[in-house]
Image 1 (cartoon, rainbow, N blue to C red):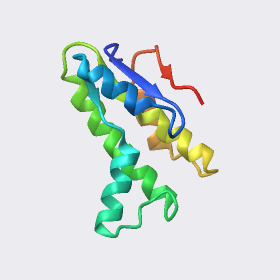
Image 2: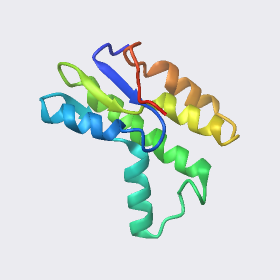
Image 3: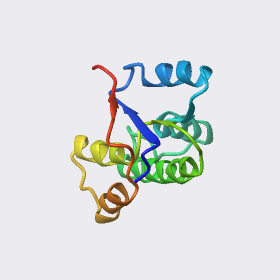
Image 4: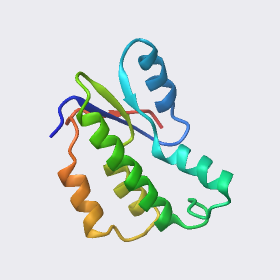
Length: 122
């Protein structure tokens, strides 16, 4: 487990990124949210791995992004605020009524975060 990695999660528009940005300005380290960047990239390149076009592939891209962020944050000394995390990919798939592949469940178990999770209000 990586006790120095703290997940900030919550629904879209709940202020997660704004809170993390404000804390980053005060010296905290952070990892960006996958979803927003993936959507921007896919729209820019004319891709179809979007939540309104191909939810399964969008989740795959989120997993890849979150795994990269998790590994990058492991090497950072001190607290790191994670704008969502690998468990959010599991939650996204469940919310969409899609199956959660065993390898995504395994990633969520192997790549642990601090047990303290910050949930932005609905």
